[in-house]
Amino acid sequence: GENVEQHPSTLSVQEGDSAVIKCTYSDSASNYFPWYKQELGKRPQLIIDIRSNVGEKKDQRIAVTLNKTAKHFSLHITETQPEDSAVYFCAASWTNAGKSTFGDGTTLTVKP
Amino acid sequence: DTGVSQDPRHKITKRGQNVTFRCDPISEHNRLYWYRQTLGQGPEFLTYFQNEAQLEKSRLLSDRFSAERPKGSFSTLEIQRTEQGDSAMYLCASSPGGANSPLHFGNGTRLTVT
Image (cartoon, rainbow over all chains, first blue to last red; front, side):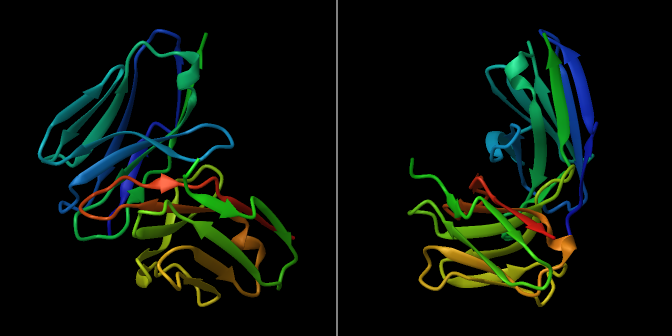
């Protein structure tokens, strides 16, 4: 089955700096890669996703890049703000699979 | 708010007891998922339904776990003869189905087995 590894497990940045979180996946059939943000005590919520037919997607301060050959994808947050502090999860799935497989999460702390 | 709702929010039970959790998905979503999350880990897949049909169950899931979605709407997850290792957050999620739809999570049920 699919295996997703996520790095780093913790990340601390100064407000205004950029943050990058990386994930690798094992199943070459995977073609959908969402990112979820989970604030303390709250539900995971989708922040951005990318499908395998594109290499990059951007939404304001958040971007995701995908390298299908290397089987890795990354989340980029620019101009970080304290409210970006949360746990971020990457996931991977493919069209005919029912489930998403998640990474173990990255705890991002943005220091004011 | 018409998001995914789960009940109860917290459950404390003694080892060996049975517990049942309920999930009400977003009404127009035909896929419903159960995940388990422990501290420092990502959500771990347990099972999912397409309408009322249970299409996949994790191999990691013991026979003590059973889930139903009798009318293709709400779902229940039952754990029989609970063990301390079952303590976790149980997350329900729904999606509209189709190719690669994002998951909409509920707030979860936190189970503590003493």
